[in-house]
Image (cartoon, rainbow, N blue to C red):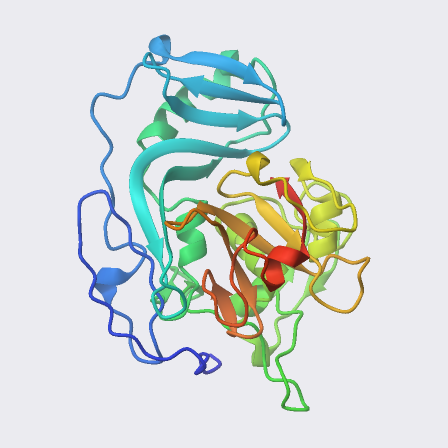
Length: 342
């Protein structure tokens, strides 16, 4: 595995464990503290979850979606038309990366993928009842926690075949010039396994890219390989996640929340945790070339995301080489162009 980014100084993090809190941290080049890893605590949900008979299903626009409320009017879940991403309200967790930012994201949002895209009235479908009952009690890793499993210092884990499927990820190998790091590291490069795309190319990982994912490769690793969304080997429309950021924005599954109009986006109100946010940060003003996963509001009231970036050599929610924010007037804030809910 490539050496992890030395630009982030080592931090001795004192992690206070509390029931229902999940702490996500960034360490230095040493071994991570297992108590601070994403799996350190598995929050328990209340045993007084209201029955489905007590729930109210409300239709809302902008985007079209079904908001599920309990008998007190509190939001239980949000299902968006044409998307599989579901927001389920659960135990609060705290995501943080103290070596890269003092900010924290305290959230009760758990982001799950439903078996099929939502449509109005699907609460009456046969698949929904059992799936939703289980999802409301589920505390296994969701989209946000899986995303946390690739930051600096995250512990590695292998499957029964010996494939390391999680752990500290880099961005890519150093360029031949020595200035910067190479893009084009996909999920199969991180895994170090060959991959056959359905109806498409067969690819083999490059040894120099083992353990690395660029920004769109990171999204494909989290949503595709780990959580089961179909993966495409092309940058065209199809039943799955295309390869590059611009193609994910234009052709990706789900629903486009914010269209790319060639200028800075400011539609913060349509976002929910787990949404993809897209940026134009390089030379071509007409091409979206960066993508991240929206985390929600941080403890300073700012809209924060996580993405795999060259400057810090891998996934980060931190502020090294530019704040990971959509609304502070910084580099990425000014470059934000569009958003999609998968």
